[in-house]
Length: 278
Image 1 (cartoon, rainbow, N blue to C red):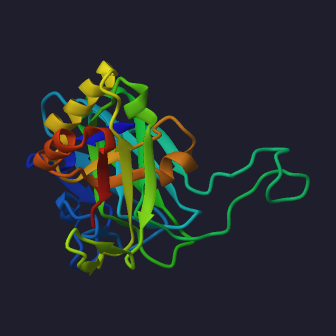
Image 2: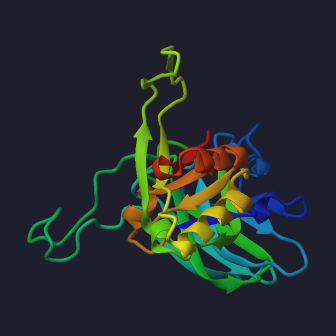
């Protein structure tokens, strides 16, 4: 598990430029905390956004986008530069990566592998991790010629991440989809309907009190991230694309007060919850 925090895209000094822009949906919308407030290009064949972080020292070990609207034929490329002229590619992420390798079955005669049928991918996160870099300029290039819509991005993360020490906090997360039709009952037996659209929720059972590393991680989350909004939770950062993609969320934890009350009131039955935001 990794938490992507302190987004350099949002810093006032960071200047964003785009290859093209649809009227009313400028690239400055990437600085909005709402991923539903997105930048939209005028095309889909090849569109890009470049971030100038300004002079100074920058620590960047992670990149991520969310709030996109891409098909399985889409690709996302992350690049960096020190002079805004010569860019070095860090990775080209192919969303339609074959789900099976050669000889492992799947689509195509003889088990040669193949692509899933084209469908639109929305709401999740496409992330990339690497050794620390301090480049001033960063670029994301998105290509999706099969799409019926123009390229759009809701949030672009550029910055560092925090990773827990204990295996319990690293890998103990459980992800579920919360449906808008879910009905909850309060203590007074009143019923309320969740009117939000479907969203992902990740939960972690609190570690045993005997696990000191896990407790240290827990209180780091409470202290440093509990009240932060709009952070990225990447549960399986080192797994294959499919696993990492479907278990990555953009949202927030409950407030620090909620976390402390939960821990103090009923520790053994307590959980930490992270929910997707809009």
